[in-house]
Image 1 (tube, rainbow, N blue to C red):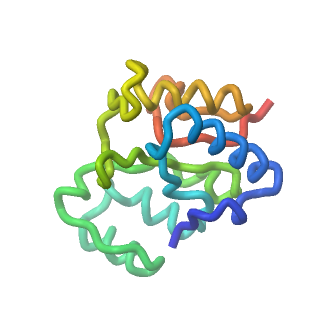
Image 2 (cartoon, rainbow, N blue to C red):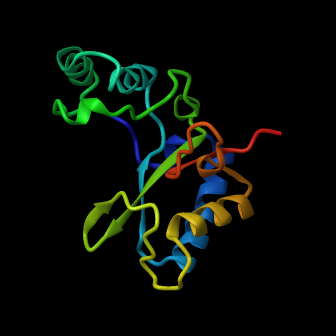
Length: 151
């Protein structure tokens, strides 16, 4: 199973993520929750199969790495674009927004009512903390993702 622990990141990434999360909590209190730090290559491979392989194949691979099975509807959507994820290098973190106790997939949500979309605040804070934000990626933006910014 994927980790949510900061301690499972590289030491240099731990430092950046701790600073990032403090800044995030100040700007958008209580909205963002960490969903994934490190994941094994086997788990990354299983996630890559989602939306690309049959439901039976996906669920067989999910089970092998301790992930819960998904539905046919869920298998219609890809959740990763690579088998070579920075998560396996321990230098990426994914987040989600919690709204009224539930996961929100609304990219325009503004939980703190400051008229700035929370994901935009998230991205600006990530940049300020020296992280690369997946929301800036041209081909496949990944709003919940931050990673070590390589030179």
